[in-house]
Length: 292
Image 1 (cartoon, rainbow, N blue to C red):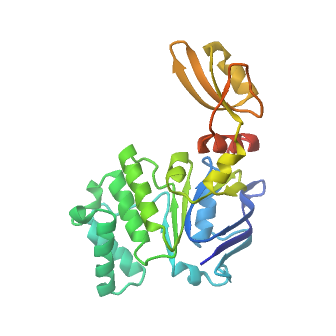
Image 2: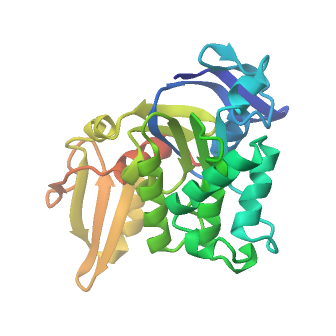
Image 3: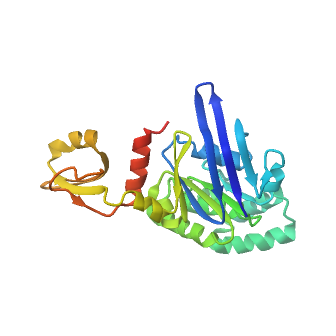
């Protein structure tokens, strides 16, 4: 099982590229696609889902070019888009039955699969309630259930935790981890904690280009001995932001505890601390410039 992306590009206007010369190869596991809003993540997701045609480059599923044979991928694809909508007057069960029919599942297989998935996403108790009364987290769980109806080998979820409360976000991340196994899952997000909790590999994207692709521990090694923390007066914060990549601040009654990325100690009072994925992400994106 392999997904290969080579020199993939998408041009929307003469002077604007949503994605440019993008290369990536993925196998089974959870890959976190991490980048700021406007970085090109959703553009890539739509092309992988065969909804949007690329301007250039190729996407191959097990060595088959999906531009020439899109049904090869569609048959094994599960997709939860960022703007996933539901029919508020349908119950959860009716909605899943409707989606199963669209995907071509026969009634007997569909009902068995729906019963399994309602248990997996913990919605058995709400299956006969109208979707209009579901919370944000419940709607997302219905969304992941519909994406799993055909037991996909490739599962794509685009910004799935936006708008969820902390408890629902943790529940959703745990669900994705449980679903990984022998399938490729791509989780697109700008929330570092989402990929930190679930991803076996992380791809950092900005301005339509891939900045880095590595396992989380490899990314952390990039900033070993390069993250510093110290207590600074409030009036120095603006100057610190101009000189260093600022990755965190904590206000205290005796000043501001600042955390920066720097090759050398920024001040004699700074202490070297262990890097976090937030440090790595902010460092990569800051050095590449702001998002589009």
